[in-house]
Amino acid sequence: MSANDDGRTDKPDDEHNDADNDAAASDDAATGFPLDPDEIAKLFAGELDSVSTPADVMRRWLDSRMVSAQWLDEQDFPPVEWMIPDLLPEGFGIVAAPPKAGKSWMVAEIGLACAASGHALGRLPVAQRPVLYLALEDGHRRLQERFRQIMQCAPLPGDMYVIVDIANVREAHDAIAAFLVRFGERKPLVIVDTFGRIKPSKAPGEDAFAADYRTGVALKRLVDAVPGSSLLVVHHTRKATSDDFMHDVSGTAGLPAAADFVLVLSRKRNEDNAVLNVTGRDVREGAYALRLIDGRWTLDGSDLADAAATLRERDTDVSGMSDRTTDVLRFVNSHSVVEPREVASALSMTANVASKYLDRLYKKNRIMRVKRGMYSPLPDPRFPDPDDDGDAAPSGG
Image (tube, rainbow, N blue to C red):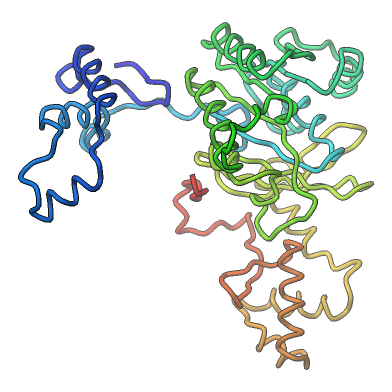
């Protein structure tokens, strides 16, 4: 058996339609199939004895596209390939951050670590692989200085390749495809900095969400054609933050919807501490503490679990908070779940004021919102839920 572009394994000969049937199904699709919904409705309403499309045409069309759960159960799929274990998997991904937050330094550090078989984010060991960095907002001189600073004057790795000038969107896609084909057996990583430089124009009358989703799907198809490879696209976040870090990604939700994973980096100006939020189809959703020192990004902990714990410790730091906010935070952290009326009763304030304090703490990632009007302490990543089976949380894709 062989793997298809999306990781599926080809069906055995006795279940797989031959080329003639595939061609016939394609012809069928071009000559009026799938059926008109109105015709289907009339058939089941008893207004028609049969539909216009012959039964064998419908069967061929359907059989060329679906597989059974039994067939899935019999397959042996390769495991997910990780550029960075438990953080950056194969597939199409986005890393988003505000302008000048250090995202270009971060992806350069990740790329150099992978090309040199070093430690990504200073802590996480990674396997060696070819890396193409489309640094479309930088030049060779600036990249040389940045790379040398990140590598601390160690020799720059030969498996790190850069392109700094692309004529148009089509040429960018061609460069990505050519690199994936050339190094496909070594499961390469491609980094594009930034998305705006390879984003095609909207078609006349096209909805913005549809345009973003179409662009994301096209990029995903490129990388899915080479199993085990990854395409990481640098993007911006919105000026206004939201309760959900996924909504912070600039533009519509179309691009994140098409992506396999999303990383959102947040750092206040002139501060070394930062937070990296991660979610995806194959990656466990999480938030990790980072530090930016002299242009080098480092995980603030010995591993991901430790960096998550560091972030929790940062969140329990009450320095810079008002006394009332501190009181509310401590009250939440001493209970499993609280409502505004409980905070109001305990701290002698109105429920409306308590609700505002709780919402403010939630938006600053100091507490969790279980559901509307109910809040709880942040979970301690060092003591995971024993009922958690380890699968990644659904990401809406």
